[in-house]
Image (cartoon, rainbow over all chains, first blue to last red; front, top):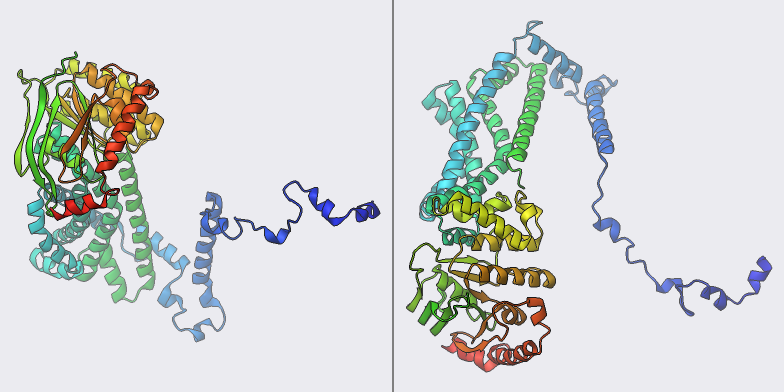
Length: 304
Length: 270
C-alpha cells in the first residue's frame, strides 16, 4: 500500500483535501483565532474550583501563620516571626472562645460587641435617611444644589477622622459621639450617591412627566425618588462598611466601650492574641453586614 | 371621524435662536389640522425637534406665537409627546407606566374607565400579556409601544412624535406605524410626526411638510393620497407611493446643505 501511495504524484494527492485548490500550501493559510480568541474570551472558574483554590490559599496562609515560627532558625532570621508578636491561628481561636464565654480571665465580649453594633446601626440609619433626603431635595432644586455644592465638596475633602475629636469634645466620650461620627460618614457617602441618582434622571423623562400633567410633588415622588432610592441602595454596602470603621476608630481614639476600646486595651497590654481576635471578629461582622446590605438591595431593586 | 379642517395648533411668524446664537427659525408658519397626521421632514439639523419642543411648550419662541386650540369642554388633555429617548420608568411595571397620567391627575378619570382604557390600549398593541412585566423584560419594540401607550392614555388632543421609532428594526417599525395609526384614528388624536425617514413620513402622514435648512421655513406641503384608514405595509407597494417618494426625495435633497455647500455658507452667514 505504501508503494502504491508513493506512486501518486504529489499534486494529485493534495487535491483529495476538499478545501484546498492546486497550488495551495499550508504556509499561505493562517488560523484567525490563533492567539486571539483565548486573549479576548473571559475565562471563569467553576464554583467548586473557585472554592477549592480560595480554600487552599486560606489554609496555606493559616498553616504558614501557625508553623512558620516553629521552623528552626526562623526566629533568628526575623524577630517578628514569634507568636508573641503575631499570635497564631490556634491562639486566636482560643482567645475568641474565651471572649464569648468570658472565661480564663478574659472579659465577656457581648456588651462590647453590642455597643459597637448598636452605635453602627443607629448612626447608619440616621446617615442613610439624612443623606437620601437631602440628596432628593437638592436634586429637585438645581439652584439650591448650586449653592450647596461647594460647601459639601469642601466638607467632603476634610478627612473625616479629623472631625472625630471635635465631635467627641462636643458630645463627650459617649455612645452619642459614636453615633454622630458614624452618621456623618454614612451621610456623606449616601448623599453623594443619592444626589447623583436624582440629578441624572434624563431631562426628557422629567419633561414627559410634566407634559402628562405631573405636579412638582408628583415628579419628585414618581420620577426622582425611585432613582434616588436606587442609587442610595447601591451605596449601602459601602456605607455600612465605612460606618463600622468609623465607630471602631472613634472607640480606639476615645476609649468609649466597644470593640475599639478592646483594641486599645490589647495594645496597651501588648496582647497580640486579643488584637488579632478582635480584628478577625470585626472582619466577620463587616462581611455579614455587607451581605445583609446586598440582600436588602436585591430585594428592593427587584425590577432591575 | 373625518373632521379634518379646523386647526388645533397654529404657529405664526415664529422666531427662535439657540442659546449659542444660531438662528433656527426666522419666520416659521405651520398649522396642524384636527384629526390629521402631519409629517415633518427636513435636512438634518434644521430644527425639526426644536419645533416640536416649541409646540410642546418646553421652549418659548423669541417672537411670534404658537397657540393650541382648547377642547372647549376642557375635559381633554391638551398635549403629550413621545420622545426619541427612552422615557419609560424602569421601576414601574407595564400597567403602572401606562397609567402614569392617572397617577399624576387623580380624580380626573373614574377608576373603572381607567381600567377599561388601559385594557383596550394594551390589547391594541399586543401587550396584554405583559401588564405585570418590568420594562427590562421587554424587547426594544415593546418598550417603544409602552412609551406610546403612556403618551396616548390621557387621550390628548395633540400627540407629538419626535423620531420615535428610529431605534427599532424596519419590520417592527412598520408594525408600530400601524399601531400608531389605529390608536390615533380611534381616539381622534392630531399628530405631528418628526422623522428623517421619508418612507415613514409618507406611509403614516396625511400631509408631509418639508422644512428648509435653518433659518427654517416650510418650503412645501404634500398631500398623501391614501385616506385615513390604511394598511401601512400595503401602501408601500402602491405606485402613488413611489411617485410621491421620488418627488419629495428630490426636493429634500435640494434643501440639504451637505449637497449644496452654498446654502450652508448662506445659513451660517445670517
